[in-house]
Amino acid sequence: MTTVVKPKREAGFPFPKKDPEERKRDFSEVQIPYTEIQAVVEAERCLQCGTPVCIDACPVQMDVRGMCEAVSRRDFKTAFRRIRETNALLGVTARCCPQLSGLCEDACVLRWEGEPVAIGMIQRFMADWEMKNKGLQTPQSYPKTGKKVAVIGAGPAGLAAGELLARYGHEVTIYEELTTPGGTPWYAIPDYHLPKDVLEYEIEKIKEEGVKIVTGVRVGEKVTLSQLLSEGADAVLVCTGAKDVMELDTPGRDLKGVIDGYQFLEDVFVNGVGEYLKNPKYDLGKEVLVIGAGDSALDAARTALRITQGNVTIVYRRTEKEMPADPLMVEEAKEEGVKFKFLADPKSFNGKDGRLTDVTMWTMELGPPDQTGRRSPVKVEGKDFVMKADSVLVTIGRGPNSFIQKKEGLKVAKRNAIAVDDHFRTSMTGVFAAGDVIRGETLIVRAMGSGREAAQRVHEYLMKIEDKHVSLYEAYFTNRSWELMEMGKDEQNLPPP
Image 1 (tube, rainbow, N blue to C red):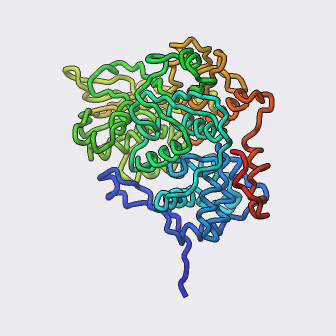
Image 2: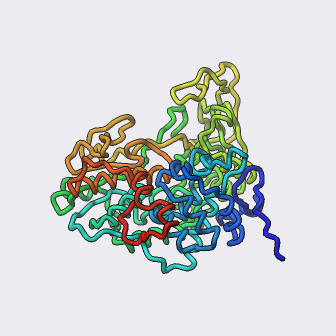
Image 3: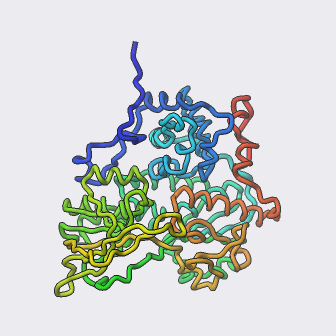
């Protein structure tokens, strides 16, 4: 008799990984997927809670409970259908969501005993299973309405919104300024975290649902919002993301070697990391500092480590406890050899003949909490120190992409975000906005959730039911609950959740 051993977690991680010394030499995926047996055994741990808070914690209301129930009995077609209903980027979010940090696994009641169900790993298994088997039907759609919607931006928010609008029967065209759709997952998330064939496959599945994607078009430059509306669009949804980089005013920031970390990531990945490695744009040297402590800073550091095989150090003005990055990514970076210098902040970038040589750092200490609840960093006079650096990657945050609102005169909110009301409507009639462009940089799945909510409002606007203000969460439980599935109710002709 074969004994099935439940996959063991190491150091708090919900997934197995390649050896750090092996994985830091290239950009192959760090995560090792579950086998079928591992996925089934892990899914059997789900308690099938009557009130599944894991679904409530998911910004796209993915049916975690239904997925686990179906996987536990090896009904993978049903499992995939259950989660694909509300999540058009299953393989992407399975890999990129910090499930243990405020999302589904953090809400799992089994975490009270210390070990939640590994939802992300089961989801990843299902996404990979569907990629291998293919041929599964796309989710059910409404009949065609004759309405046309232009979506600006083919990132997570735009893709999620476009997919839902297409399922409502509207004709959807997404306009993307880059030559490849995908947004941040395409040009800013390293291949070791998200293989690009996964993203490409899931975008193709969205296109199969009738979503048209036009690349190389920057709305506000080549075409205006007014033109889109006058030339046939019944509504426009702006999802241009977070692009405006926060900059340091540190002396010496113009020295060669002081680099925008976000631009660095885009340059490495936008045309494929293989193409970049053939013709590198940056000479990082062997001593690299990364200023910042978010997920992008971790990505910049780990990417630089793979490119240079040198010494990479993340510099942060607070302590590790205050880092906003996913703790799992921090641990992976440490395993690979990335160093960390806490309670330090650049005072001046120093150089010779226009080239960076080192950085003078302030020593910091923590003072009272700021608006975010984290203790504010305070400079300690007289304790400056110097760190050698061949290059510095500045990755301290991005605000909403302000291009289109400045060009079109849309009303703005804090940090030049597009101002919207509770129906996601902007100051221009017929124009809506969602995702990072209305709130600033956030998680992929949160941008998707915002895009779906905005798409629902656009649908209500187009069909003149905007006062109904349907909750997608309630629609899921009313129309597509796991209980109805258990009762044998036919799901095939239900509207999109």
